[in-house]
Image (cartoon, rainbow, N blue to C red):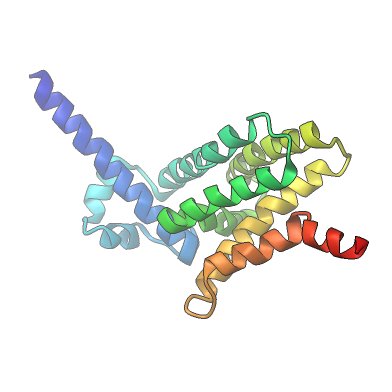
Length: 204
């Protein structure tokens, strides 16, 4: 009896995962309000009834999507909680994580930005949860910057940094076929890291 129950539970978990992945993809590209349950069902070859079997409403799906997006920052926060002593090395490490996520889960990068833009004028529980998700990264990045060089502007810098990462991902998608994401990352790194070569040139 137990193996059957476990098999059913595993199938339930897998189905909910597929629904959330489809919803994340569609929310990122169409927006929450323009995405329907039918869109989500069609995207993964399910019926709307099957989706409603797992979720009572689109709002319930949104809650779980935002919770998953919150968790998507865990790889960053785990890295930032390490004892970094060199700013440039830390930034390059963050960008390595970004590249991995962009190639494997791009929707998790742009969906939060899409939802933030869509709900920013609607002060309610959704935007509060979205901001809380951002703050997981911002808090960890600010703390890491403080350990390297405490400054009153570190929190603002952390907010700007996560905004830039999401903008970079959007530009990579918009300019697909025109410029590689690797080149965009290298351009970004040239802006936010200290250019030792330039300093050396100035002293010569």
